[in-house]
Image (cartoon, rainbow, N blue to C red):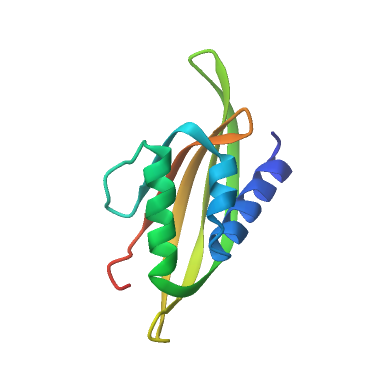
Length: 128
């Protein structure tokens, strides 16, 4: 996976998240994925991760991510080729009551065999 493909993966991921598309996550997360958002503990059960994302999506009216930068690096991890991707940007939320909130975010992804194996989101969600 080259830099352009990494940028496209991030674009597709955040477009799906903005569209609240849990089916996209189901198709693109590895069965052995590690997921964390904010200060929550790491989750490793894919079904639980999908349910948690669905609940979060239903707790807000909408969101729009603006990715400012994407960097990637190919590494050999225990004999497997892993693409490590980091990105950051801004996310604009509309709460269920119509009020708005913006926050910065950073995400670190590991991708193996075209599936996301690590999905770590660093963002302050306390104001939502």
